[in-house]
Length: 222
Image 1 (cartoon, one colour):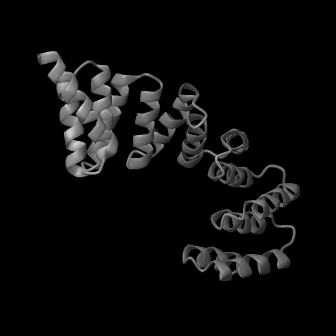
Image 2 (tube, helix red, strand yellow):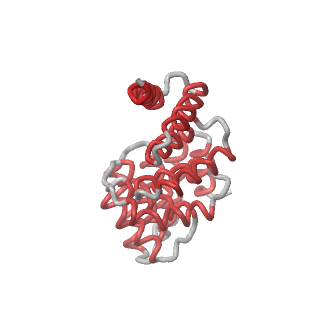
């Protein structure tokens, strides 16, 4: 087993000190291989040592310009730092250089969504959902993106997709309730809020939604 493989295994087992030593040894033995620098940088991001991580990613890119994994790593680092514009740039660079899987589409979509650009985010989130049909989080975030893009009917149906995967997803019930309010169906919305609260009694948004709808119905019927 190479030092690189050892480092990855140590990292997976949360033995971070040992992982750092293994990656360092690999880099000393293979100073012109960018993969060692990328893996060490990934570890540093996990440890929130962002400045050092950035230096390692940049060193990898100095060794090899076309390196989508380095751009993806930089994108993740900036995303964690909530610097979404920079994250978007690096995710786009990774995609231009050939990275094509659900993670890159999802992270690019989330970066755009966090910049309040749901319509730009939408095609990436849709593609991520197509590639990860069983991933509850991706399916849910795609539903939220549809809602933020004012595609209320589609968002409602997407929340049903989420609930088919996880019938105990309280946030999906809450968001169905919000969609139903937009559709001017307060009684049905109330039912969804109550389902969310039954699953998660401390769901503040659902609790607040329930109170507001009950007040609305009371005023309407008085």
